[in-house]
Amino acid sequence: MSMFSFNSLKKLKIVFLCTLMFGQLLANAQNYPSKTITLVTPFTVGSGTDQKARALAQIISNEYKVPVIVDPKPGASGFIAAQYVAKAAPDGYTILYTTNTTHAANEHLFKKIPYDPVKDFTPVALLFKGYMFLVVNPKSKIYSLNDLLDLARKNPGKVNFASGSSSSRVASELLAQLTNIDIMHIPYKSNPPAVTDLLGGQFDFMFADASTAVPQIQGGKLRALAVSGTSRIASLPNVPTVEEAGVKGYDMSFWNAIYLPAGAPEKITKQLNEMFVKAAESSEMKNQLMKNGEERVVSSPEGLAKFQAAESLKWGKVIRAAHIEPE
Image: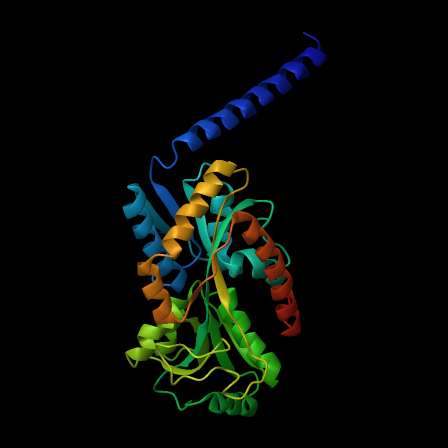
């Protein structure tokens, strides 16, 4: 057999296998969903992302009579979860429920990331927007944002903050940039374990997502100094915004969205969009969002792609302005 014919047969085999796989995806799309759906999250159990993912999973499971489970894969700034989903079959049964950490900020925080936030994923739906609380240990002598800033100015490089996500980190770095203070960063896999160490006095302050922080604040386990958005949160109306507390121009939020691996069939992508948008607009989710001062900001798959592109530019600008050097 000549080399030409051998190579030709090899190419035909590859084409046949690709055609077979594509045909199988189309066949699966006709019966979707027919088995367990897995929502992979980049943060630990108990995080704000995890809480909303579990609420959505329950709503969708009840509505469509199909099991939906949440599979947290925390660590490495979301790399582990993002890589896992990027390598999964694009059949609609492995979904990344994530934040701007993996799909807008990481590409500016790291010199190299092990996935492409655009090429490796199929956008499905933008769902929520939320805010963070600047919190300290209630046993500390920091009672206000001004107290924290005074402490940092008197002790340059010695006041520590933690972060369990890029949003959490950049919120603190932006505060430092706008107030000209020198503070030290301590990274965590997620906000809940960071909060545990804050209660143990391991560092001085952090920005924690509202879902994680609100119950701890209301229970007296954390002291809230400010909220990161431009308006106060209804569940804690006495907590001022960072700008109200004296830092002009401060505004920091985060968002949640879902993605499939690249190459997902359009039919499944659109069906998942309808399923998750409907769940996000349910009364159950409305109550949870209201409690934490979060908003529904649902979109089409095309809308998420455009939003992500704009957010990447925005986060890059914020990160550079905060003088954060890529690691």
